[in-house]
Length: 328
Image 1: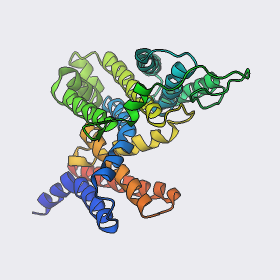
Image 2 (image 1 turned 135 degrees about the vertical axis):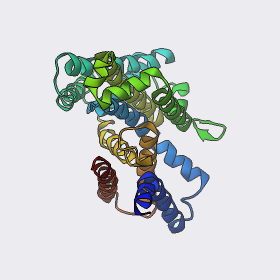
Image 3 (image 1 turned 90 degrees about the horizontal axis):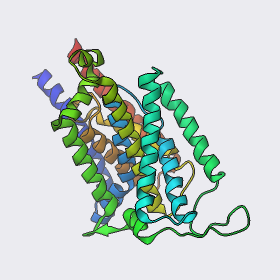
Image 4 (image 1 turned 90 degrees about the vertical axis):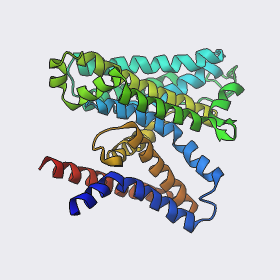
């Protein structure tokens, strides 16, 4: 009986905790549990969710991508400059940042898979390089419509309205970024659960040597995982630009820790004990709910990080206690 109760707690405890947090804020503030506010929460987490999906994929192959925040920042300024500086058509504005993500992912994969640099060190180095690149490219300035240039002229372009709609528009009353996030979560979950490539990624992360002896091309799998991680970060950068209507340097810096927190909170969802897309989504939801609720209760913003850190510690404690019990 005791073991069944513990197993039930580990499997559904995270979901009950999320429900309790929502119930608490709903009782504390009447405006919290409304359709508009719930949509605001989902819209707020949509960008972090894309970045977190990328981090989840890198963790699935037993890696870790620290460069996702820098990739978001670079994608943001590249997207904005293509419109404001070079007046490129929309299709170019959308495709080029994704290609930038592919290049960053290939660099990460080259350093990790070919040169054999440990994941954390390689992606940390790439993070610094990419941060330097986007600041050098923009000379440290934010990019916005008709911005003044260093030579005294004015930038010829403006942020395209169809592009801004991607981050600010609604479809059937639902914010479009929320729709994109839901589609991404469902597609990524189905990919890793039901496709051969997805299962190969999970096998590689579970035991790389066993996967290699089974005939899997683990180097190729890990390379694709890092490319996917960077591309999801680039999508987050494009959405960020579309939402705020400008390209901000260091926009992705806070997203690294938020996405990592969402991923590790997701470890405890359904007692998975490993990176998984659905868990990551619920982790992002929990973070978004807490930030929104605490803001509505006028809690000082700098205490949010303390509370988010405590939640992360609790989720990790539950997860690893469960994993330790299973091993023993």
